[in-house]
Amino acid sequence: MYAFGLYTTPDGWGYICPTANTEEGLLQKYTEYIQRGHNSDMNSLRWGPCDWIYHLEGIDFFNDVEKIMVDRYYYFF
Image 1 (tube, rainbow, N blue to C red):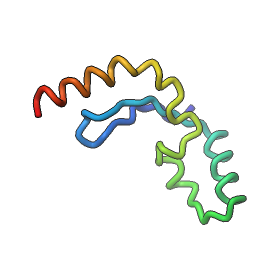
Image 2: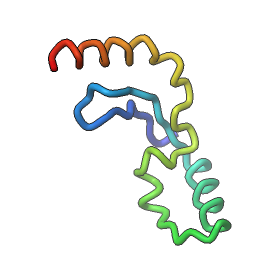
Image 3: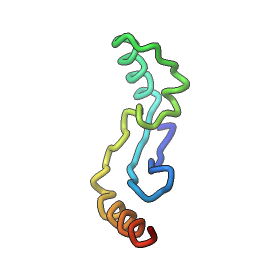
């Protein structure tokens, strides 16, 4: 694994989800995109969490946290 993160909205209030990638996952996604005819750049896929092989893996563990975030957003705004 070369990267793990918590992906969220720019304002930090909408949602939060885990994301991660491996070198093997990067190569798998790159190959998949090339086979579909996409002109993909390996470096942009490397740091694009939405394209990562483990994006949203384990998202259910963040349901309670997301509810708190949304509740606080509506409290402040």
